[in-house]
Image (tube, rainbow, N blue to C red; front, side, top):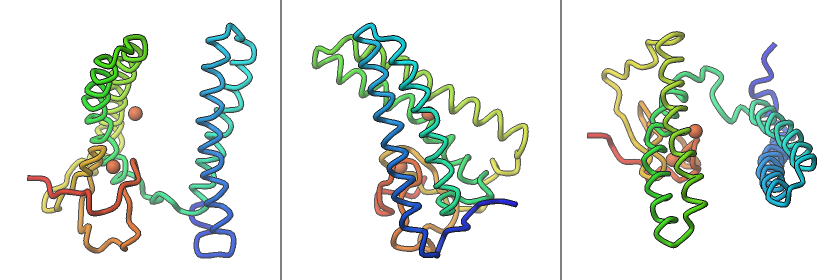
Length: 181
Ligand SMILES: [Fe+2]
Ligand SMILES: [Fe+2]
């Protein structure tokens, strides 16, 4: 049985949402600690932090599923996400350039790698959809809205979404979405 959305609309929803956020923050914190530990040559500590980080990430995803944060039928979301990943390569590279211009070449070099990885996520998501759900790539007759912050694409009637709608990737409100030409 799917655990999707079982706590949505129940008295557990708020607590589950807090847990999801805490676990997501924990993931970020542990990876930051791992990085700092590696910088100090503490490789065993770094490994421990990474192990914990990966588990926290799993926990965050679990709570998100309980609350039905993402649709159970997720291919439309994946299609939009694929666009954000594709766009991410360019925007991360542009940001790396700014970081470099400020004199932080070492950080910028690493961000260039991240940019390529975002592009790669875009490629593998596209391949996945072509293989498993090609019909999800067909958006004929649907209106497409693009998040001007992250490039996520929404296909359908954005006005039908509740006022609380936010970009599932970057969290920006609905009014940052622009109709795709
Ligand atoms: Fe990515
Ligand atoms: Fe976004």
